[in-house]
Amino acid sequence: MTEDVLDAVRVALYYTLILATPVLGVGLIVGLIVSLVQAVTQVQEQTLSFVPKIIAMLAASILLLAWMVAQISEFAMEMFTAP
Image (cartoon, rainbow, N blue to C red; front, side, top):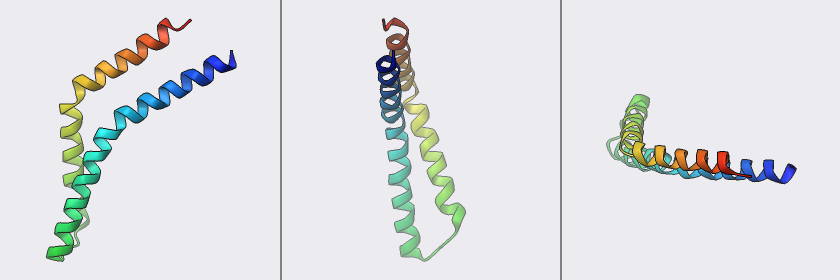
């Protein structure tokens, strides 16, 4: 019983990592680019770094939505069909 619960938690954390990585990666890349632009231009506005990251992460989420739904469906099927 305990092994089944630990296995389910492990699989859930795996899927969480798989689903979050692309969106967070886009935010990281956009954040680095904006930071470089801010360092070069010496413009240190906080909203300048926040807004592009949010927009890029939202766009990545929309573009990857079909893949994310497929992954979540696979996870749900795996959880419901587990013995």
